[in-house]
Length: 285
Image: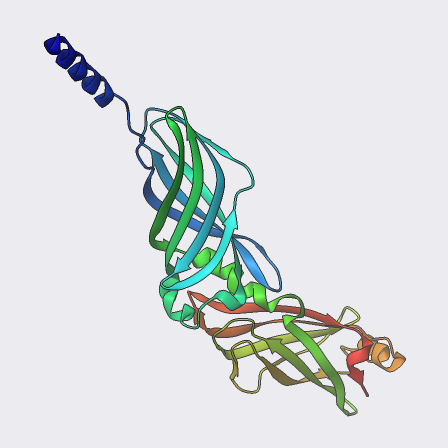
């Protein structure tokens, strides 16, 4: 009898050893990033991570949340509202939506994205429901990812909307052959680091009629989370801008300024387009 019991015990131990253990998901690579939306406060970044489910069972992932860092600096957080079905023994892509505020970018961000690359670490936490049970999981994707395309949008985005505005347009001289306007813009820097402006070129139209062109008189520095005035003089001949002058004197001019700022390269981005409008309230004769 004791021998039979020992035999049964060995059989049970052997059977227990055959029960499959759920293995943690594996991270294969940080596939890339892209900017999907920008506004005055920040931008939405989607980080693509390639993962693997090495188990013989499928899993349903829910409660998926993310956090992203560059070095010790946390950039932002995000979550997926819908669950994700993952096949057994498969690789799959997890697209991480992360909201990044301009003010969350660290002061050393220009150095971190030199050459258009960024060291990025993204942590995903989620609940995995499988036929073997339910598991709370945490995976970390990290690596050096190409970010030039995303930066093109993220750097130019803060200079749209009310970040650049027309403060004033004033008559600075009316002669027999030429009219001179003095134009003042204000540019706001939403980043936590300074932006060095090397040059700026601008064109002014009044009520849709081209008036003239100008450029910055000197390089300037936009302070971190601060603003700086941009002053310029625009000359135009009466023959080419008669309609614009009539509009100004009539009291209802609308001003449209286009151009670009050339900045010290930020992750490969060196030009920021400008496109702003203003009504007659900024005009003084």
